Image (cartoon, rainbow, N blue to C red; front, side):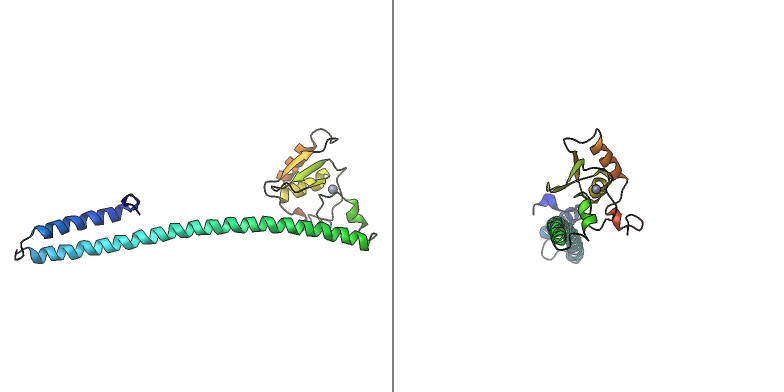
Length: 192
Ligand SMILES: [Zn+2]
């Protein structure tokens, strides 16, 4: 730790201690000012210890903030990874369901891939866009479900499919801006 890192209080306390020490050193052994000098030395020493203590607390607090931010970053990465795994599991579960109960899951199978399994709303038209997450995992969808999916992703993107009608991706983007994430979980936000 270089001196440039010290707090202003610590700088002042160090300077005061040096001056008091120099003054004490200059005194003769039996000088009448000895008791006064002793008092002064004790005083600056207390100030120095106080400044050191405050400086250390500030330093620890900065260090804890940095550790907390790193922890948050790591947790977010884990969440991204877990979300990706869960989405793959959901698709797997859907495929299994279609294999085992082809009729009961017909309604879900009829909807576009961007429709969340818990979102009971029907498609709003043909599949016209692709929605991608930050890891380029994505799903094609109708404008209605693509907007709901996009609103639920952090930094998701939407692109038109080659045969999409003019402005499809822009409409999805604008619609997503007016939706909350996981819209289908809200009361009245889905068909449940
Ligand atoms: Zn759809």
